[in-house]
Image (tube, rainbow, N blue to C red; front, side, top):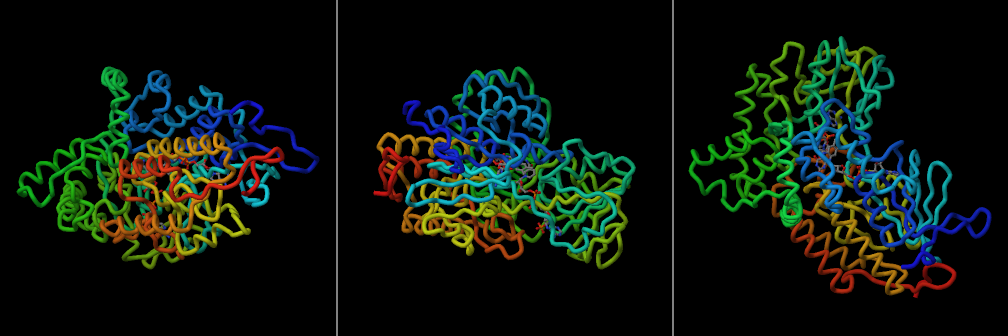
Length: 558
Ligand code: FAD
Ligand code: NAP
């Protein structure tokens, strides 16, 4: 690739769109790394980001207690050994401000900002078959023509408010955890309500309880939560990791979830109850998601095995929570452990022993409406000054489908995915040439350490574009057959686990009307990565490669 082959040229005529090689939508971990990699290939890249800063998840989710639940040493880019060595993490689990500082550092260190347009939402992307290019339109009136379009829009970026009537009448202030004000919120002396007890609620509730005069937690479904046991990182331990970082990264890449822990081999049912309890206690004391989820090999595939872990966690809730009725209400019984994303907490269950905290069990007394003074349930009006929605996201498809993406023949992606997302490898979708999705549905994405999955996807996409350019191929498109086979494979694997039994956001159950389809790939990173690599080695098996470049444009359809 020479400089002349890239396309950052002025528009040919007044009114015609600016031309670049690649448009990337989103400037979180995925969009930033995509920009860096593609620039390295000599391509011109335009990134659009709706937020007023880079960082994606870590730009938007500034709620009290927001923190990663993958350890900092592993929740970080591996592409630059220098970056790995120079960045010092301060805690076992990095807080949102620390991750945002890291991402800002990455943006500066690799001089990324000059190709990122902030405060700009992509509203439409349309494929022009004749020219073999995407026209990307934004809410600020930009129109850019690109050969490739990469949706790095995030799996958990389309924030979702609950379907509760009356919010407009509320006289207090309200917030969504995924759109938290940058200046922070002072809950001192206020009566606060939190709706939602997923990861965001469970992280924020203990911190808000310490600030507020009174906190009411509105819980629809109790969740399994494990102690984080966060702590400062010992500099010597960090130095030891850095001394052999490549080996750690390699172990992470070869692990099921992109986290360097050994894979378990025992069944939970193959050991005697004392030994089982001993292992669960050790995992509980160690803290973190992985200790408990990797205690035994069959927790996510065998209900009886799963029950042993679920019962252990339930016993811990009863031990911690002083009031037996509150403990009972906080105890998850409607889904197997791990089938909804388990949460990590710092003092969540203990918070319900505080005098200024009330739990409202919405299964017994559902919310009727929001009223000017607070929240009315079937039992009472809870008077509130502030309301926090920790109600999650339209996950995995929400951000993609909020864009009018039109492929060959003007077909709309939203319509194509009306019965659930259909992709090949979670990377591409038939009928939409030269469109890539980073950590899309059908890939391990949210079941893994996302930074590891993001790097793998971006590397695959960059290698693919490099190959197409080198061979003079204009367009790559997943075939319908390969997509159908992949969707079947993803479903078949999921159906061999307990995952689909839960009403989780993995199946879209949190969004009324969303088709119930298990979206992530459960086969694990090593098999997935090997499959992607085989597809590449096989000349992009399952894709059709068409078109040749010409002098006028990047290619004409063959
Ligand atoms: P994002 O960070 O979501 O970035 C996508 C960006 O695209 C956003 O900035 C958004 O504004 C922008 N965008 C979307 N649509 C448009 C559009 N139409 N036009 C312009 N811009 C657009 N993962 C883990 O592995 N471990 C964790 O512990 C973990 N903790 C999390 C905690 C929270 C609170 C949340 C919400 C998610 C967490 N995740 C975690 C998942 C997290 O989303 C990923 O780890 C990672 O940050 C995703 O990066 P991304 O770049 O793919 O997407
Ligand atoms: P979530 O897991 O989807 O939780 C949303 C909560 O809001 C659930 O308790 C849900 O109840 C409740 N809710 C939704 N609509 C409601 C309504 N109309 N009435 C009452 N309650 C309602 O969302 P999240 O907590 O933001 O987390 C989403 C994902 O982001 C996580 O699973 C995780 O992957 C990631 N995340 C990670 C961390 C971390 O620890 N690093 C932190 C935050 C987020 P139901 O369960 O009944 O639907």
